[in-house]
Image (cartoon, rainbow, N blue to C red; front, side, top):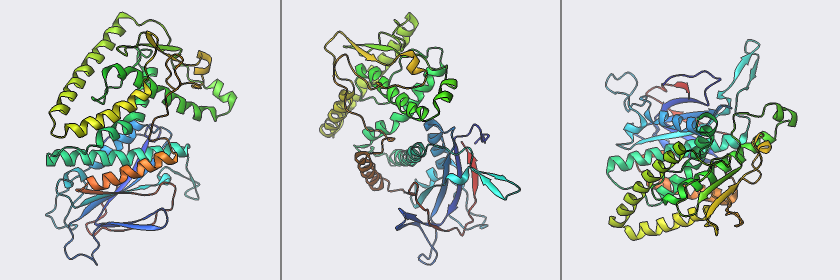
Length: 411
């Protein structure tokens, strides 16, 4: 993997392999994965201990890339150090045969710099928003679980769990919203609304309104961080590349946008691009429905699909007028990335209920996270994933008779 400079990297990682690992969770409970010599006669387990930290340049895309890198690194071996027989493998390869694990430890101090010939340490560059760092950490752990589960099901030729698709959609929401916001500020077509196309179960008429909902929430979340800065600095440093977003109108029958983010009619080329995306997703949706009808568990899938559709419908409630209208603040407000009324509303209809996001840390979402953690633990039979507690003391004990084989890299 190409090593980036500290200024451009978003995720810092330090990894080492182990035979067995014990980790203190929530400062009160020890969990063990792998093997320790005093308990086993034959040692074959190999796992990875991952220390992770986030810089101010971190994004969901970089976090997901870091998760993929950890699973693909060829640094694991089952044999002893120097036995001249064992070959290195990745966690993804070892997971095919089971008996492997990953322990993840949040370690903000990976990002530091020595001063005064080692007499002091500076931690400039660490992600200053603690709540955002917590969301990134959760996203990293979940991405590892998801990739391993998909690999496990692929190798065993077994279907993914019935709950996985809806979980995956929720998991991907901040990444999709981040991508949409980035696209708005970099593309020549930055004012053209984008579509949510990662989930084939979503009806075509909802892909554009639903994506606008996610984009609005991401911009709104970003504005909270911006508003914490000094007012004068915020005015001086307001990003001029952010497109003004006034009114977005959607056709009530097809859900296709009729205007861009500035409220202006779409150009012919923009309409052509939008219809191309819409028709491609419509074909995927029809193929998905046909697969559900032919599946042996079609009744169960239909129930799941109905629940998922109800959830999406709560975001894209029907309007009594001929078009859907999304109203956002004025240009001057957008100059400070502040969307005070960014939730998706349709004409005079009441605002829909707030949706679940990985970055929402209320009690309800915490309970859902624990619920999905349990489902993953039950489904992941090939690999054990142990995640350290964010913001807590990380007591740890490891055994590595094959050599730690440590690596440090950035994404």
